Image 1: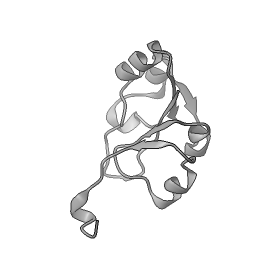
Image 2: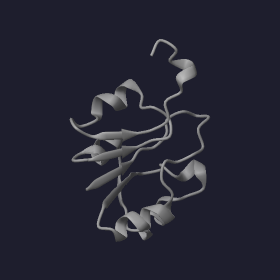
Image 3: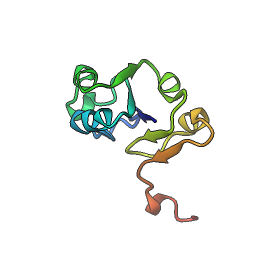
Length: 103
């Protein structure tokens, strides 16, 4: 199973959806973890920590999402990111209900 961690695009978001320690645990179970380059930088986790934990780095979100079964983000995807999600992928992210009152 390919699990993808996407970089947060919001300038005020400093979190990342998966830390290297959890990446290593998923890798040990046999999951393939792909992290978009720079995804953990704002949270203090450089790319090298993800690659040491067993993740493969992808230079773009589109590259990371190719063949993904699960996509992880803190914030909901932008419309551009949503267009890149492969059919059948499971997206795990926050869903701010207060800004989506019509739902």
